[in-house]
Length: 523
Image (cartoon, rainbow, N blue to C red):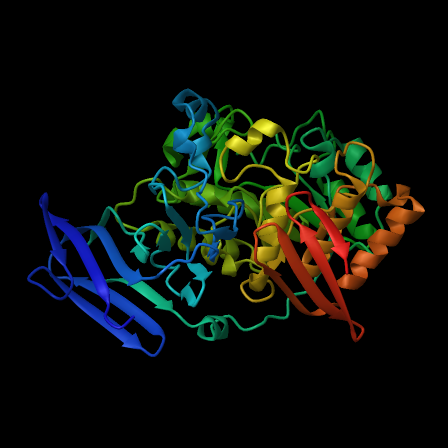
């Protein structure tokens, strides 16, 4: 950037003002040191920020690949072609959006989707271009690739912020190495575990959990009880007495007796409409649904101190019970649609840090979470849920960008792999090798477990591994060996075929992954 094309719009008592430098109402500190740029605003009186942008000229080529990092864990993330568009759910029939709360999962409620513009969050690259934000604790960096106008518009997510103190609007680098230097490699251990979800889903019971535990042993290290044990999502202190007549304490002890860590699933910032906590404390939650799961659910308003104390109480309850590992899901739900005294980034960061403080000595896996705020966790899911059919039901392709899909999550696993063991340990979601209750082909199952092993720190399954055939056991063992691979890399020039290479025991291996069919071919 030869010159900084910066523009700030703000309001005072309903009157709008625009500034590109210090004026009568605000002071601006604009600094450019090497590849790093920071912009901080100091109001001289109370103002409401409306927009803050930096425009960068960029001549897009027809075959240019543009990395778009989605809003949250589940949002589709990959390199897009310059002529592609993001899926915009506002184009769906409004009754359908409202019926299933499809606008609750992503960013469409506060970020306008525009034709010819690819937008993502905090990290992006294209030909001869890279940008990475260091400002996710203050304000998200929305990176708009305006293909038709041949420009990149950097947007600080501050619209509606009532400001009476200073805030950093932008803090980013245009140098890839500079960005990585801020996130040095971490000594994050790999995890191999079992989860009840992708076979039983909510239909779990004490009998099924203990039966699955009987079939899990070395080399597994973790046994996780997933959704379905609670009486309702949100009522975390109430275990279903029919499914689990003896509670969960005895199960934790049996998990530990097998030499495994005990894991539990919660969605601490979510409560479905039929839950007691929502019925008794609707003021703890936003007045819009954050998604259509279960009976529809609401996101928790972290401005309520009572609500946050309840979250902490629930987390400590399971920590005191002996659980070692916490999979915390639907964490995006704490983000509001409108902001006033805090930005979405500040709200999320403070809420996630509070979770971390409540579980200081426990392992946390975040899921359905905002990416850059999740560096306070040990691990993070980096794609949507795996589906038992490669791209799930046909109509799901037209739904929100956070939909269940093995096809999408495999792409996310590859394209977000640079985050692994730097920001957190990446969780690519489960592998599935079983034949029953599964519609993935043999080749798709092989691609799933191989890519998970290469590009993630977490390998989980819901299979009964004791029933694996000889071929399935051989594939499982082969994938485990890939976790020791070094010099891992990938490249893609056409959006479909992704070249993958790595070295293992001094030998180089090369694969081509067909992202459309979900199959992997070794070269």
